[in-house]
Length: 82
Image (cartoon, rainbow, N blue to C red; front, side, top):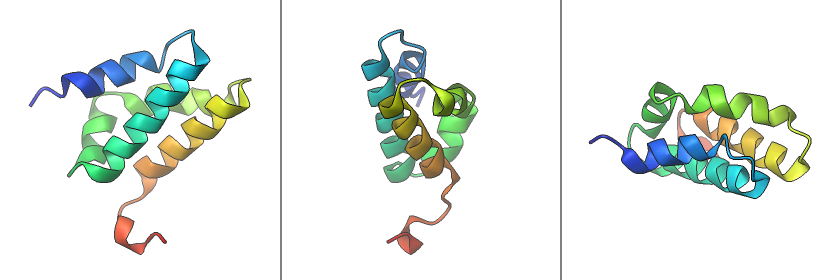
């Protein structure tokens, strides 16, 4: 699989529209959470490098989604997270 849609979401992280970037963060986080090996795929495609700077964005909502996305990338075993 070439993960075309994930690549599109990663590209949307750079959107000037902050709402679009926030939604992309959320969607990438959910991909990481539910897709087998999603963490490794998202990291390999460069998602983490683009999401990290968004944690310090002026837009609080975008900050929040970026932080949640990075958090999801860090979690190894979802069954232990309640």
